[in-house]
Each structure stands twice: as C-alpha cells, then as structure tokens.
Amino acid sequence: MVWHRADVLVWLDLPLLLVVRRIVYRSLRQLAGLDTSPQAQRLTWKRAFFGRRSLLRTAIRKYRNNRPRYVEQVAETTALGVRVVRLRSGREADVWLARQLSVR
Image (cartoon, rainbow, N blue to C red; front, side, top):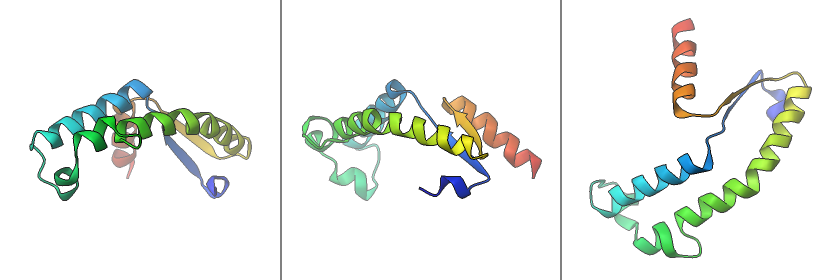
C-alpha cells in the first residue's frame, strides 16, 4: 500500500447490504437482457448467484475479509497525517464530489 504517500485518502465505505443490493440489481438487469455489454452477455445465473465463485458470494466474502483490514490501514494512514474522507453512502459520495467539482 502506498496510502501514506497520499495527500487525501477517499474511502467509499458502503454497507454490505447496499453492495449486495447493487450486485443483485445489476445482475438481474444483465440476465434479463436489459444490458447488452459483452460482460452481460457472458453472465449466467450460476456466475451471478449460485456458483462457488459467483459474483454475489465473492463480493460478500471479500467485504467480510477486507473491511477489517481496511479499517486498520486507514487508521494507520490517518496517524501518519494523511487526511481521510470516509464516505458511507452513495448520497455522501455525490455531495462530496459535487463540492470538489465546485471548488475547482
């Protein structure tokens, strides 16, 4: 990690429920044929939801495994004097980004 070299660390720390909801919604749209991207055309029910390495299972596993480590690394980065912006919702991210764009 090179976070300690940053001036500002922006962490989009979304709740697991929101992450899961977005994966399910996006996957269902792709499976229904409402998204014609190459990625969507390769998606199957097994890849999305039911396989051992499905998108949903992988997202949940990575969230649970990585989040505690990120909390620790962000604390260490903060202790080194890096400003940390922790955004916990899409709305917070939109507001923060709008502020950054209006400043420029």
